[in-house]
Image 1 (cartoon, helix red, strand yellow):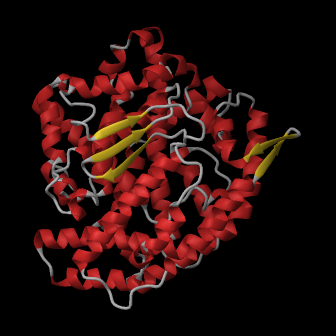
Image 2 (cartoon, helix red, strand yellow):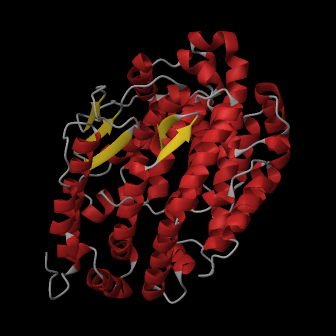
Image 3 (cartoon, helix red, strand yellow):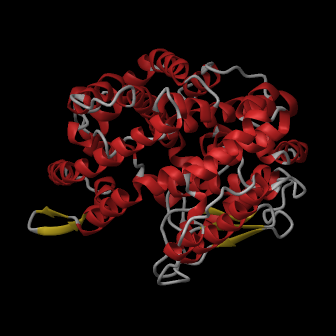
Length: 501
């Protein structure tokens, strides 16, 4: 498709972005849910290829320079969306080769073939450490083959960022997120420092009791099995996932369908993705939360998080312009998801589940360790990404990656994994900020409605009012409303320590 000779006005760009998002999300849902065997995504991308252009980005950027107040925020949301599209278009050729290689890759484990894409799930269910290490060794071989492609994608990303922003990739990402990423990295360092003692003690005990390993011997290949909690899966049956989510919603006085705006696809059909996902097809009128039921705490928590994000989108004010309805700030949306998902870390909620009464303490210990490991790993990855993206020289960055995770998480990651487990656009920072917002939101709900706030319909009303703002509420606005401060990880630090009480 030929690109337009002249850039569109920002209003027209917004309309085309809205049409594109609706077509994209609908198609992704139909394909990922198994309702379509073949996807029309390439045709959709081609139809709207003009959006992923420097001309579109510059048109919005020029308009943004003259705007103030809400119009400026609206344009910023649109600009960030267009930059995402432009970035994706530039790395698409490399990304397609990367996905193709992944899809074809197989691991050789004891004379058997294991698809690379199923290897992480295999680690989670493998009790034999020798087999886990064999799987890991084969994964490292695949990582080494994928790294040249990932490095090409990284260089392409940095090159485009330099053209869009003189300060380079880190500065561009910071501007888009509205935060000093280096300052946020220092705050993440404080989190790592203040939770280290309780983490090391708990991880050392778990490694010894569950795996018979010293802390220094832990490797990445051990973690999915160590923290998977498969022994608790029967207490979280697949058949009760929908009822569990509905119970959380109704206790808050919330209609699970948000007046018919949310549809739940809960069928276990062939070809359907195993991951829970929310598809905001038309916000707020048409939201789909898709789930392929699966037993286990992790699957239920992931589903609850998607339910929370779906509720947020479905309660967005329908009268808001597209840039505020559909382009909400990711960390703000994620905070609603975390609020729902984190119910499974709530001591009172777990105590009220009859099926958990016999092993409640063991479950809570397992969940607490998994939570603190995940957050510390996320904080470490973010701080590593600041180093990776600080310049265009990538020598020894693989060793730095491995050393940093060993230092902060007491787990050995092979240097070959330095790009496979690394994000190129600081989504780690977005996720951390979303978790901080959730900690603040939960704290305010408890202060306002008491310790049993999850059983109060007034608390649900408070959430509905908060959700109405959609993308009109920036991360900074949300922090201010909840009494938080940027670069202050104290609420999250306190939450982690409380899990071990």
